[in-house]
Image (cartoon, rainbow, N blue to C red; front, side, top):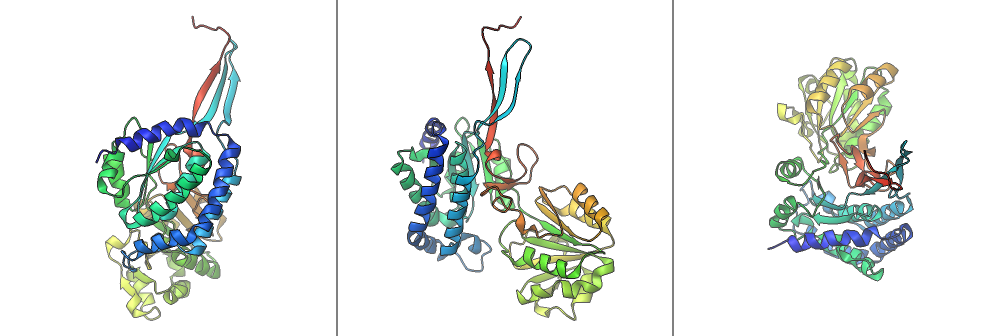
Length: 415
């Protein structure tokens, strides 16, 4: 199948969308939020078709599943984005040169934004909303697991665009087959940037094969270090929330590091996890301490591969470390540079941890579950970048813009 027509239409749509004023953009988004709620029975029925094709034990099942409440949350995020200030046209820098040339550095759209993602139908809405708000055209390649859900959501979006006489190619959903992925990876001249959202294998594949610039939204291999001075009650609550609030998301906790001076508190620290049926993969010291208190069917000896694993399920690694420096060394070796946390009452250790940990989001005495565009006050997110060029952390409106220089003169020529 020749996919070029999709990319040509998307490129042509950029001129239409960039001409929209900010009031129209916000009106469309608010109407989309209403339409999502009104069409929730249709969306849920299509989502059920996808769910019936996936085992409930699959780690992706929870990400794929939509509910009435989740659609309401998605609609709320659309409204939040509509209410945010639009960065387009903002003057980043302005100066007048000695020759009276006026130079402005102004925010502009990236252009055509391609996103490859797996079984996450909410991404369809998030990407369109953020791209539309910033004058970008979105080209989406969703996974076959969510094909019915994505098509349903796109129909709702297209219906809203048509009602406002806006080019529906402002959002393009490519076919769910693999050939569309290969075409998107090679859509040079049409797509300006490509953002993969999903497993580490998907991200690696896109990075290794794309001819288009890639912004990596990496997997989350997330650690929390429980320091010698940490508050026990605080630590128990934070760890339970970071691990079990929603296990299939990239900010979920994967490994707890415990200072050796507090190893005796480990059974209490992980006690809420047993009630949630969390399997622990513990190093020798931790395993020896936990085997008399933690349910035997949930406790395993850790193998080397359990450290540096993004579980995306009710599984977690546990390791004892002698001090903060060993914790920092472990994180440096295994982190995916997504989200990392320390629990401590030692101000010096907080400063050391926040300064030395190389990650997009670094926490002190808080759950890593907050690494999320909406939670950071960004309305929604197109992904969480774990790289350092262009964007890092939750990517929202500003991260979907570039800039250009506007130079105004009055007959100046260069000698």
